[in-house]
Length: 192
Length: 192
DNA sequence: AGTTATACTTACCTATAAGTAAGACAAGTG
DNA sequence: CACTTGTCTTACTTATAGGTAAGTATAACT
Image (cartoon, helix red, strand yellow):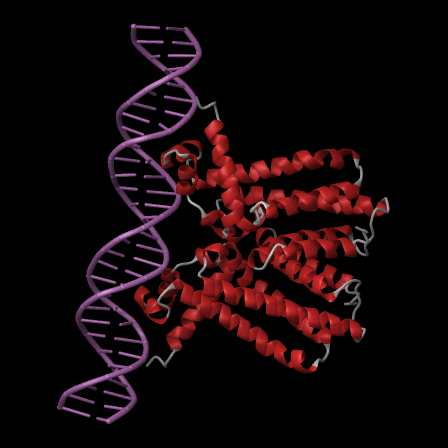
């Protein structure tokens, strides 16, 4: 009774969860198949090599971000709302066990990944940077928040801060992410 | 003619390099032994389990930091110099291929690590946070730099920013680390 | 000279990983 | 009805990982 691509979606879901909780080299096809109650080869049927799975995962993640941000990129809008949405998304992911960002998960094994995965991962990162840079520029223009210097490096610091906070939160506690988010707000002059 | 503990030191050196370039699960005893021209079991002789190696690595790293900071923690001093020393140390590590900070390397596999390694890693992180918090507090007191809010969260943001920047630099380029460092300076009101 | 400790090597073991080839079976199509 | 297509299972292969037990060489100690 399994619907078409039903298993495929389930594989993706489980893989995404595993990727963000253990890293790319931290889970195996067995972890996926046993959880779904299918055999190992079933996963290989949908994703012949693990690199195919990696590619699908990063693509899916990128598409999600694109859907959420494309409207803003095209027409502008409330930068503060975009920012808050992003922060909440990040926070919620961590609080549901998906503490490692896909970028973080892949960065460790980056040098061993196939070229296509590397390119897609890098593209994803650059899109994110570009988006946040514009959000910061627009938001300062509209006086929703303030900061000194160029929006580009500022965007990098915020993204790196979130990335690092997620890592540190794993070792210590999720409080660290909250503190870092609070500090980012403070540095942007956003009253909470 | 191998001097006492000579091989042990070489193992540590190579392991540290591998840890910071591939992550803890990204290298094997074989990677170490083949590089040193010894057999696999020789590494096991010095570090029976990989967890023992992990412990030694994080301990060594912690000791390094302790040596560099203990004087400051005891008597105070120029916070700006401490900060610059830390930044330069980080930057130099990345530029010599040791892009992944040990904390970052362990954070991915954190949940699978033995309790002792986890505790030591967490201790190391907390020591670093404590140190940077004090550096920030003293530096603001002495008007070497400025920022708003508590030193604690600010220290977290800076550490997380560096941590994240190292990851992002792996995917993109080392320029990202430089940009993030520049932005941190800017946000602290340090003129470069 | 004989014993002991150190620092290895040789030769294994077990577990698990990714991956593949071939077959089963159901649903739909000409 | 025969045939194809999509989706899986069974039953492997190959490679590598961490780890161990037993033996060897060398220097140091008594």
